[in-house]
Image (cartoon, rainbow, N blue to C red; front, side, top):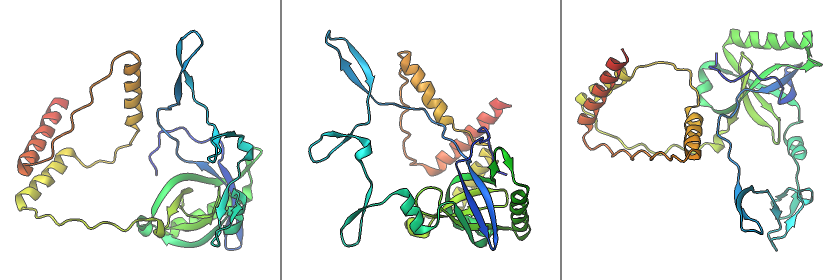
Length: 273
C-alpha cells in the first residue's frame, strides 16, 4: 500500500481501453500525485508617466527569431525534421497514431513482482473502471477485478504499452491499480565507476553503530521544502531575511566525526525522552 496524504483524485486525467488477450476493459487513469511547491510568477518594474514605480506581471510573448517581432500563438505550428532534412508538421495525434492508437493499452507481458526493482519508473496513475455519468459498468468492474485477482495470485505486474498524451510508452500496472511509466533502458545512463575505499574494521563498526543510533524506520514522507520556502517568503515579505547556513566543512577525521555523530544522536534521544 502506497503512503498517501494528498486528497483523493476526483476527476480522471485520461481514459483508455486495457487490452488483455481478447478481453477489452474500459478504464480511466487518475493522477496519483500532485505538486507541493511554492508558486512563482514573473514581474518587471514599471514606471508610469509620473515616475511612480510598481511591479507588473510579465506576459508570455512568442517572437519571430528572425526579426524579434511578436507573433500570435495560433500561427505557431510544431514541426519535426525528417532523416532527409525536410521539416514537416507533426501534432500529438499523429505521434500517437504512429506508435499506438490513442486510448488503447495493450498488455504485452507480465513481470514477476520481485523483478520490478530492475526498472526505473516515474509518475503515478490510479487505474480504475471507467465511469459513465458517474456510474461504473458492472462488466467492466468484474473484468478489471478478474485481471487484478489473477495478477495478485501469480505475484506479477502487467507491462502495458499505452498512449495518454503523445507517443505510446511502456508502463507497469500492479494488482492495486497503480500504473507507473517506465524509463526505457536506452534513456538510462550507464553507471559511473565507483572508487574503491579501504575500510577498517573499527570504521565499519562505528558506521553500523551510527545507522543503529539514527534508526531504521519507514516514515510517511511529506514535502517539508515547500513549507520552508513559504516561511522564507513570509519572513522576506516582513523585511526579515534569514542568513543562509554556513556550508559544512568536508570530513577530515573520519573516526572523530563518526564518534561525534553517535554522541550527538544520543544527546538528541536523551532530550527527546
